[in-house]
Length: 348
Image 1 (cartoon, rainbow, N blue to C red):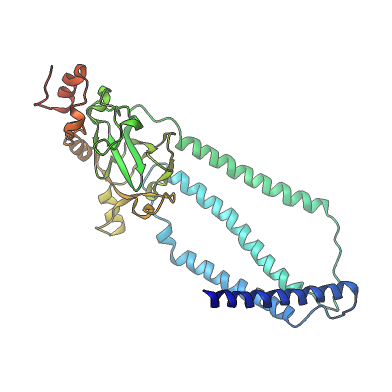
Image 2 (cartoon, rainbow, N blue to C red; image 1 turned 180 degrees about the horizontal axis):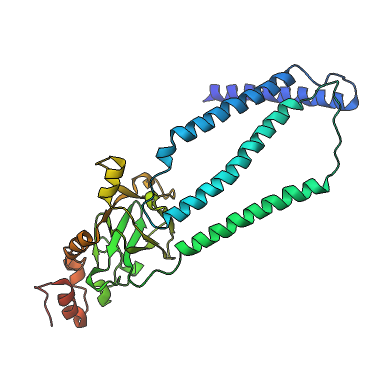
């Protein structure tokens, strides 16, 4: 450690001496004591600017086309086509501007490098140019913002009454998935009820919660609206399903939601991609802690008939958790019997 400290000290000392030398040289130039302003490194730097422009530009376009299918995933939701159109329109506009400005930036650095026999042109103002480069970007950005607002408004419109409600709860480091059962209504929850046997904190005094069930995967029907009711149990998470162009933060204490309609079943997507191992994935896009990498859950899209069959086979959380069953209020035990099919509950 001591030798490392000595080494760092020497490096810092050399850096300080170099800076002192450069500062003294600049002071000499400013005072007129030295006529040598430009060196051969000026031409070298100008040439390197152009080399970097050509090399980095080639890599930029090569990688963009080569990996296009990997980062531009197939769309599998109704709103996804609107999202894609807006995204690529924005990319086209900003991409063209980015490429042009980078070319000009590096070209100007090479073209107008300092030369002793060249005099700079003083160009004080040009009102017409100022208006053009202010007005044109303002109009383009206004159109993009308005279009984006319209698409976002459509995506976040109130869910239809016939939507399939599903709760997605993020916690360190997994996703919990809860369904509303046969009554179609998710029961109330309370963070004070969260425990090892009650991960969602469901309130068994609410009769709507008695038939809620959970599942290890997210299962949804094709062609029907689905609403993800999103919340977080501890820190900030973010629900992300790339094939559906779906992303919504999961915020502790502030429930959010996202309604969408899937257009391709898992089997249809496997056939389209010629990949029998393909699965939709629900991932977290917030760095929520050390186990963030493990927050991935399979999402399965079924035909409506298959979905109904699967749904009817599921058993409620209360039915499979005797400790919760014992906490059902006496006046709701008969309701629990009817909703869950429990045949051994003691009715007082």
